[in-house]
Image (cartoon, rainbow over all chains, first blue to last red; front, top):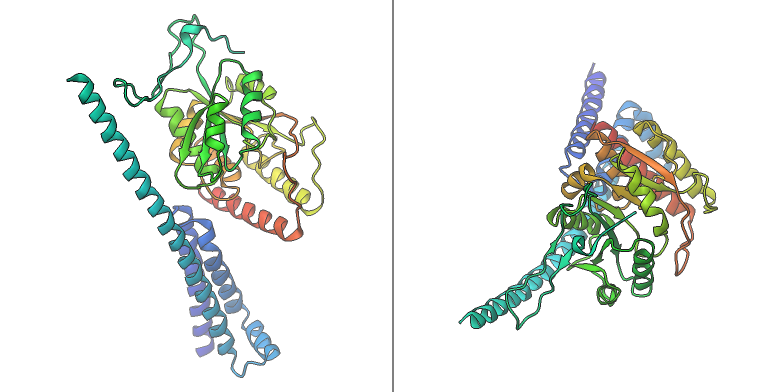
Length: 123
Length: 267
């Protein structure tokens, strides 16, 4: 009974997570490259929820004392990679924003110069 | 072909500081001086650091299609691509940052919409596309919204081997089924796009790797646009041929698969 409840809960949650990610991808809330890690996590969690023996077997093979530790380990790595991706994207955006700001300032300067010339000519 | 009289040429007034009001606009006749309105076509050449290639590409395009308007979209180049393009006689749009082919093309589509061009033909800035095929691409625009100049369709002997070839073949099969038309070259950037496609792509055109080809096709299909292809011959890239490792092919295939699957579910 307890086993069944956990089983249903984990499979259900995995499916829910996958649906949410796919829905957000479809509605273009984020780009595909951001979803790769999440999709991997969602699919892995679904597979492991459906076949817990895989987790246990893998944990034994790799020498983890408790199978849950393997889960935590992998989750932490995935979160780390996600944060890494976010940092690099942010940096790129910052760089772009600076270039755009400079460009706007220079264009405004040119426009004002043009305006001034036009007004000078008219008068 | 293009029978543009002097009167019908686009009038480009260049900015000149120190003179009067003139601003840079390209005013294009909508055909009032011609019997049957031939809708103006804009050749868009996205180029990123193509200092060596851009002048020959523009020159060859003008030679093959006299009187057409060519827009080179300088995708944040760090070299003198823009200056050389201007010297070769093209209109130039200089992006302040690098956006990728998709980003450069969408800027081109917006330019086309803003200045009244009906259709856009993409010609790559590295010389792989032969402008001799452009008129045939444009002719088919009478019946279709998007016309792709495709390799592996019987013309030319463009050779691609190994895992990359399998990936491309598989992709072509799936995309052909999805678009209900025979497509042999799903990552060809050599495309003519009619008014409906230009209107759509000016708003939505992916900038990611393979987004401007595979995803763009999916977007077009979901909006009910029609696609076809004609066989073309493409040339090798002028400088350097990137080798296709298995790893790169794997990235290519998985990226393409994702684009396909998401595109299909967006229907």
